[in-house]
Length: 327
Ligand code: UDP
Image: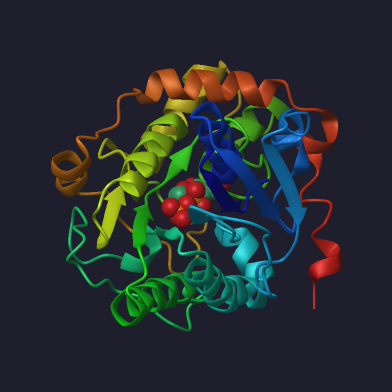
């Protein structure tokens, strides 16, 4: 039986990856320090004999007994609100965390795939973003802690690949959505759907002309799985090129939820990228992958999920474990 360690296992993407690898017949070790992750996302796996959970912070020494074939590093705060509140932890998980995991991959002779992000392109001057573009990042801007941590992570991973011949993969993930996103993490999709469910106005930042391209989680997970099993070690974009302005997106959510609330405009946060759309011809050619789920279908499934959440998830602004990590 192949074994895989997934960090950030209780998070949005990590939990879907745990499900996927278990369904493919792997033994899965899930690791999370639960700063932004939620055990509810993996509660259904605790009775699975092929799943083991470690409550651990990967920024400190990581130990896993026995053999390990694959490591997927998905632990990190990932929304602008989160990494503004816990910037030091964000930097640590992308630097100390990746160092520990690369070391673990070496001793286990495991293949390691790391989650990078479209944020490494910053506020891009090239559109759509190809893997060859180096980005436009302000290291000391509000998003710098996340962007630079992820850029360091890519550099460190390539260094281990080049110096130690480590078997590495790097995925640059563009905006992804689906069930198990945290409703109040500030991301636009849970923000709009949460507002609609609570009967609040939908808050569009700026004039809403900035664009994003949203990928449904099942498509992304399939792409990550294919990348892991491929022999491609350079960074690869995964995302859905179907681009939409945030104002049009808000209108789609109004329609989907049938809310009678208004769309209201708020200040655009500093450093908010103007445009974002992945160029995915590498993924098409090398992995034979492209997204299949249309936004209308993915949004319906996601809305149904959010409607099942309890009062705390709907109304609490912050994750319950957040406070104790404030330093
Ligand atoms: N956004 C918005 N209203 C909200 C939350 C976000 O208009 O209540 C905008 C935000 O300014 C950004 C876009 O939606 O332009 C996507 O934001 P998100 O935080 O989801 O992701 P990112 O900016 O990292 O792509």
